[in-house]
Image (cartoon, one colour):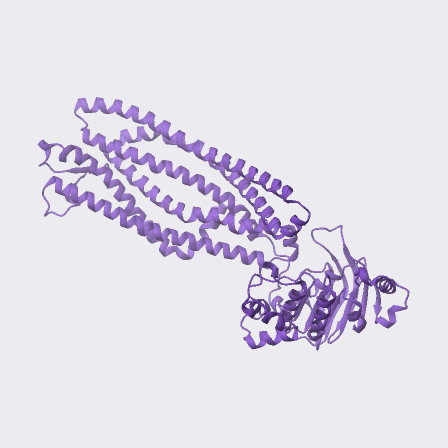
Length: 609
């Protein structure tokens, strides 16, 4: 019930359209009931010539015993019984068709709009999560929740919600018809409903659990698909096609099994209703024979009653199926609401300070950090150093020393466990996140580019930037020439993750992106790793242009940049071991000297600092 109420809350802003659809569906349900009422007059008056001139009674009010005749609903100018019945049939079908069409459109409008809002809300919530959230949730599974799980909810809140209103009002209207025809007979006929409702409810609970398992299987399949397609070159390089094919087939088979389990559970309710309905009809026919012989029941009245009852069983069957689909949607919504309820690790304080410029420096003061997902794993302990405005500070050390982790604390991708990271004397936890991150530009080793045009990738931080500034940034990043050689220049689509470009070209596009952002603080995270000599030289020149007049934190850069650094911070196992300039540390006899000697012993080995 909690999940259902939360889903309905998203439809609250569309209450006018929802109310109108309810009214229209009620009118359509009433028109369906009128069809059943017209069966009696057709048998007793239209097809019975001897009774053609007597008034056509539709039903009797069971409370006040007031008779309602067809002439109450048909214009008085029409006197012929057949004409009245024909006019009523046309009017009923026209009313049902018009009301059903517009009611169906409005309820689908409400359902699609509400679920679109839900999907947008989930996406925004996931987007605000910290790095720890994305480390503990795979991309494929998140995509499955945002798309497949919400698709199940969308089905229930659009098409199925429309059918729910339609069948509910039809069932209520037909129930009134059978009650007005013979309430005792109606009550006897409806005693089978509890025998259907109880097992249906239990089946619905099983369907909800099965639906959740189905969505989990689908998420697993989606994850395998995403990983295999993204890493297709690795798959081919290691000849792992049979392994990935087997993994995909196993996941597909698991999904097939849970889907078939759902079908078996969902289909069980229909034969239950059919069986109890057959028993009811046999009992009714036995009763009708007796009453018709006694003259207390006409063939037309009984036919109308049976027709209404048979019509009533159809919406009851549909409502049971709708209940099962809603259970499936509620099962799918559980994971969606888990994401909505997930507490954000990185949040702004109320009244967070908006910072617009950077003037003094970044201070790491007695910083302690451990990854939330691995509390007993890697740790940074009692880290102290300062990056003054305008300085180039290099972080060096063995692999796993914590260089990238430390750099990720400045833009607050993670929060420290102890101590503080301050920008211009303000703890980053007290600053407005958007303002803080607007001050920092990042060029990483694994550059991520979007499957978009070159221009849009460069202007990612400033989508409204004029073309002149985009071109200027590309020229400074030494990217302008190769961009012009591309088929459509700056409007060329560069492919998923920029795969149409070489490594050096991707890095220069990333540098152009950072240049256009024009942030005063720059983080270079192994920006020239894995590049060939020519590409590295071009990227180095582009980085030199980027670093001008900026405060720079260089992580594991090559020796040429480290020599130019104002300060080198040597890290090992999450601690600061040495601090100084290249000249001060080269003969110190410590970690830096050892790494320096290793690099020069075998320059071709690509050893990085």
